[in-house]
Image (cartoon, rainbow, N blue to C red; front, side, top):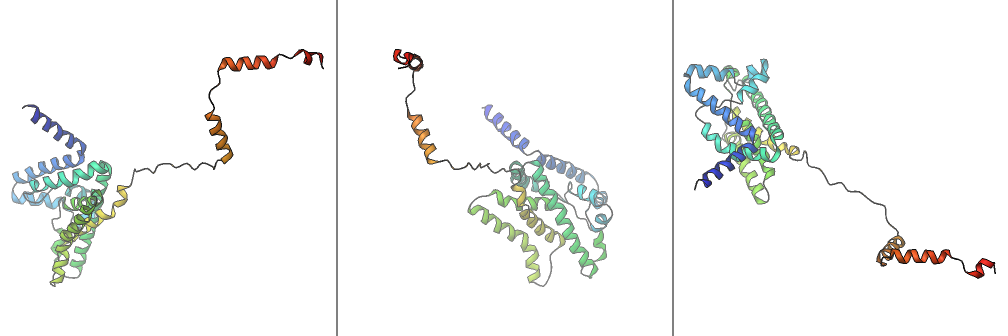
Length: 262
């Protein structure tokens, strides 16, 4: 019976090793979540504020804030992310490889952040949002996850692809479209999630990188007479070396009449 748990542990370890980026990221999130539970509320607010991709940080230190914000989640949501990381992130990393998977994550995270914060800036300038939102806390991994969920469409086959695509667009667009229909508006994070999904769909070219087309060599046409001759010669039985040697010896000896010149 000890072989069954050992085989299960071995299979689990192989799966983890096949998607190192996903599980390293998940482990870092676990550590930062533990830290968030051990510090006080005010200290946690300062930590998250310093790592936020809000408008003020994007204007003054964009790269550090974009990097740091991807390793913190707000609240008690680490266990909520385990299943999506295993089913979505790990699946795409194993399919595309770590480099291309990470490219999708970065493009979706950065692109959705800048688009959503640009919408927020417009709302502040037009009086639809308060000036205090310049320092709003905007952290988390959901934009990267939404982008990878978008490119997952191309991993599915048949009717599953289209059913998943429709469900994904409904989930991502509803928080943005439904408030507009009711005369309100969604949050900038809702807009960011929708943009991240669309960015993931636009990353389709990354699914084609590295795939080679078989080389096709076009040979010149061959004459039918050459083919016929080749086939005929190939169909002849092999000649014995002894018979060939005897034939050559006979042909090399002249007859007496030939020798006399008659």
